[in-house]
Image (cartoon, rainbow, N blue to C red; front, side, top):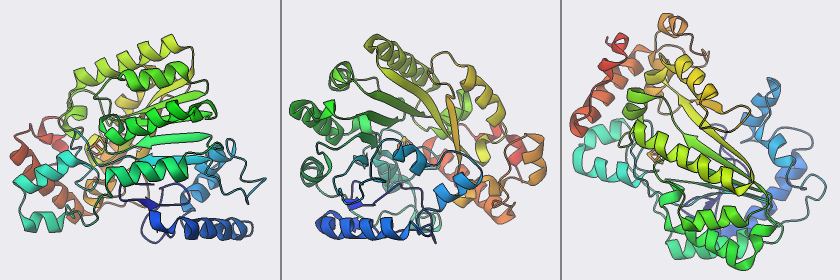
Length: 357
Ligand code: SF4
């Protein structure tokens, strides 16, 4: 469920042409009917919206559905409509404006767009926001009444930046007050690594008995990190990661602290170096601490803006669906140059001059 009060019956890995039906919170019952129909139909064929899992399973990678099915018992008992696993996007509040993100996910981006960009640029690069957030009160009440229940086994917080969202803390406090946290087997937190755990999160992790997964978003190291993760600093990221690990080590919990990396044109040159660094960084904690996804949208920031010879030279994993497109390449340069100038930020030319056309 997201900050607009829009519910999806399963994961958010969908794209145009592969979108399942979504429901506003007022249509909770219809969502459950849809879920049961989809469950029935999935016995004979893959359902729309499920292509991400289908692709993962085809290449023998573990899919989200395989991961979730290890936790929930929906496979044995589909009629149980209690929500057993949930991902909650707790709001758009975010203190960063990462270059591949935008105002529909980050409040910092929204204010940057309002104050710096003209309407032509906003339209060309799809930087407007159409959908409103529901009120925080309505959002949190719905989570308490419909999502949190005694059968809930896995909960994931994402954003925006969930550690900056008041809604996150209201939900965590509710889990602690009601004791529902005792039934949960896994808590996942997707965070940008700008802020350390506060007392509410520490209290949850000290009392919790299940496993914790903290996924830190990072798309580089040093200056590439600071270029993409706009308004963050590499030193702060290292400090926050170190502090999280120190704290989690004291809890005795089974936990994982790892990197979630978005591979795109601007970090394609340093990707192998970054992967090597994170796989060996002793401040992480996981057998496979480095995970990456490929940016498909916005297309002008994707690997489609990198000529094939450079992708090969830099040994970046080549995705055949992202063939080189010179127009996207030009757009990428225009996009970065405009936001760098408005933001008074050092240019990408300092670390990847090969992208100059
Ligand atoms: S931290 Fe996440 S929500 Fe915030 S700007 Fe970066 S990508 Fe967007």
